[in-house]
Length: 515
Image (tube, rainbow, N blue to C red; front, side, top):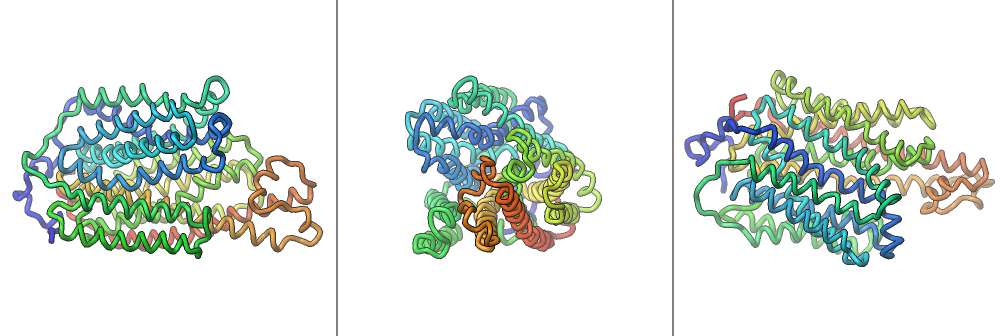
């Protein structure tokens, strides 16, 4: 049984120097640029691809399969994050990040050459396998290169990539779709990724422990199978089949069996992919469960706010995207500012403050007037982003600051994996809440409108077409407005649960390095 990381005497670690403080390294600015470029590949991928789906379907066909372009990418990325994190601890961050980025670029080039929807889906899975390395390793490297005092500022810079991507992605995608071809949304990754790989290869020189390792291949395979089954069950439940149907029950039963087999294997492995102390230590447990809850809440605006903005507020696609992107303004600012707070008040209390802001934001959306002003929605988004930034950064930095170098990859990847697992759960939860609210409202419609209302699947199409009568249009607006608010009501419960989970984090955990 492995000891908790903060109880191991520093002299027993092979990396004692790096445990105490980040090793000064020249050209840290260029390395940070490389990390931001690499992060932009993963950050921009979903938004830029989403804008060219009509063109892809028009060219390749396969309308009934296009949702897999997103599902398979998310699945491949999520299940590989813990494995890349372990490999980064065993062999160093540099080879793992360069290798994963190369896989992502290979997948991008293959997607650009796809001749059908099925090959494109397969190549998207290859992209996702590379994206798992990016998400696991970029934040780990930031923890290696910067001290506890500096990490909040650096996380602010990395978070800004997501905000920029939320604006640049749809704009570039729309431009490629209108003036060139959808294939350029994948080709654009090549110059960005190659520049990042060059900078990492040129400027990153890291210390690596020189001893023999044993990779737990069986554990890695079981973990991938368990993650695949679980995420697949969440993505398909409520969409391809009902939650209570036989396929859904079989998928979740298979997931439970694979999780049990993984736990048993990891307990017996000499160097497990995800060690038990990740879930026994209060710092790790509270932080990982906290960001899991945050990931769940993130899916409410991510999935339904742009559609709400277009259908209820009457905005165009670009304006709706900007409303969603406004969340990044609060996120980046709060993430950078959180460093001052967690150095004064501690990681847990700063994260709790972020959780309170998150709760106020989701509550504020529910209390907005019918068909609210776009400025009120934008202000609420900025507040929500501030809550996310103030919550996620202290939890991530706290995890990184309480473990030594050779455990930081595992600890960081577990934190990132938890967030993406939360988003997968959130996709299922918000979808169920929204669909149930729409169906209930249509079933309870006034008798004078009942025969003229579209089905639940066609509400969005009818709103955008605007061909129905004024009375029907107004009722559909109220249906969509009410369903979106119902999603946020569910997120209030998720935000409150997140606050309780963050309380598991010790008030003053022991930090292994100088600040």
